[in-house]
Image (cartoon, rainbow, N blue to C red; front, side, top):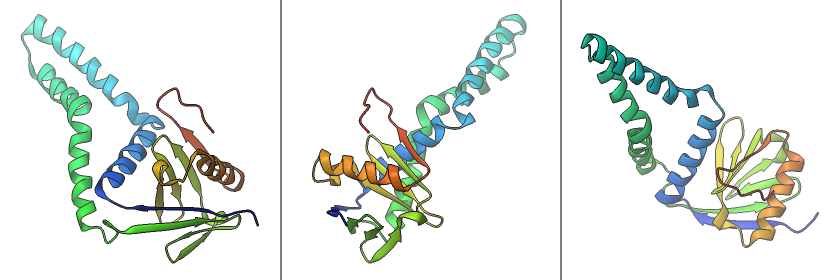
Length: 174
């Protein structure tokens, strides 16, 4: 067995929101929902034409409201709802101690074999791990250094069939 990787962090609201936003961006980027904004833009264009030709402002008004929601209010509203769920969470402000071995990951007192992890997503802000029942977030800042982070990424890539990289900037590590 090679040397274990140990990380620990406090599951605070900032970490929770960072994980939620990263997961949301990843899911949106990889689904058909990302084209909804384009639909609202097209509706607005038809609304402008309808208003100019017939004086009908209904479509323009509806599409404008949808555009404002899609591009300006979607994340703030989601953040508000997610923040409320954090406040009710039994894990709020708890410390997570994680030990990563060649054959398993121990999170506090829970042990998860690598073959029980269905998906790992590497994000700029950390790693999302999914099992059948739970999901976990390992923030990038929780790793001791870049070497530990790279070692974990290599282990996850080797042991989990569904390993994805979801970077939003020009970062190409891993």
